[in-house]
Amino acid sequence: MSRILFRYLCPVLLVSVLVGCAPASPGQPPTAAPSSTPAPPSVAPSPLPTLTRTPSGTATPRIGFPKPAGEVADVIGFWKTRIKGANVDVTVEFRPDGTFDLNEIGASGHPVDKFDGSYSVSKGQLILDADRCNRWIAAGQVEFFHCQGIYKVSSSYRGDTPAQLRFVLVEDGDQERAHWFMDQTFFLVEDEG
Image (cartoon, rainbow, N blue to C red):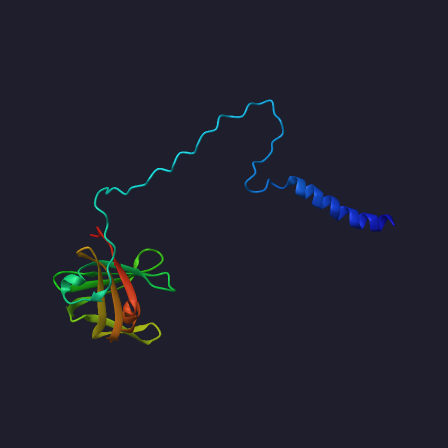
């Protein structure tokens, strides 16, 4: 019999303790036990300050939408990307004189491979022309030859400066170079010399 009484009495006691601890119902102020410490004077909350935006210097414009590169000025600069899935950075410098240098930089931070040659830009296409294209012909043997690479290239500008280049492979006689450019976005590196 004591088990039955315990089974029914415990939930009733638990509910009464919880009801006693519950906060006052909305609209009624909570009741406080008398205290010897006087209550602080009531202070009305002050409204939150209004935040206003004030210009501070020149804002950096956002990078715009890509558009097909139409002239050499759309690609001039020192560009860099990280190859997805590899611990390799690739840099390319397009110079105003129509020459380029492409460098593969390994995990050590040192150049691993280099391509150079001339380039031209017209109607959204970049044409790379190089004498030092290469292909593996046997284990440890590389053949060098002249080749061209053609890529669709689009430029995204920040203000009036190109900020990103996006390359899409059309065709390239050098498979390794095609791997570094194919479907890659390069970012302008400022203050490279």
